[in-house]
Image 1 (cartoon, rainbow, N blue to C red):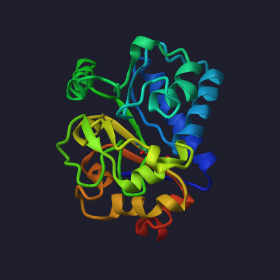
Image 2 (image 1 turned 135 degrees about the horizontal axis):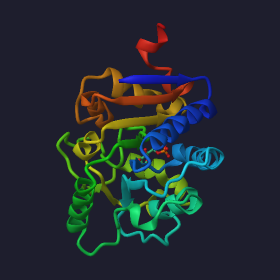
Image 3 (image 1 turned 60 degrees about the vertical axis):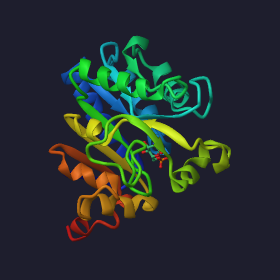
Length: 248
Ligand code: GLP
């Protein structure tokens, strides 16, 4: 695991954006795994500006989003698809046919997850996967208890996650769906490179558990320790509980 610890969130985002733009520069056909959540909002706005400035085109990039709520359509403002359209897809020259998204409204949810897995395989896997982290150590919507072998599937959301995500549902956790579709842990670990962003003290315990705890499914992000090419991009707050870095 590598760490980039920055003095501010703005600097951390800039480092992440440079990294992604660099990868697209080297491989214009990059297969990019994308994440949603509050952490990612500024990342996308900076990525959009920087790619305009550097004249980086997404026209050959293919994207796979990590997750979606069950029962929300892409027109629903709380859906992850809507989040992505608003914050990123509508602002760059990505081709619609190169965007792969889980459909939370599919009649056959298991079939939808199989379709997603096949699409990942058909493009030869994900080159670069972007992740955030939940306060309980979840990645995508792989909640505590998720197996390292898990594939894309339907999952129950924990109360903690529904409460954390209530900020996108007018503060009402009862409105947050109880189920979601998520890329599996093994699907995520299949990516060539993984970049995880975490900002603020509220993520410090989750980051510490992911990095310094033993590997185990109770902290799904700790399963990333099994991957050869993971970079954590953190601000000071999110890195504040890391023993390794405290002593450097
Ligand atoms: C959501 C998403 C995750 C994201 C996490 C953190 O539940 N499914 O992919 O990493 O929450 O969200 P935030 O950045 O809002 O803290």
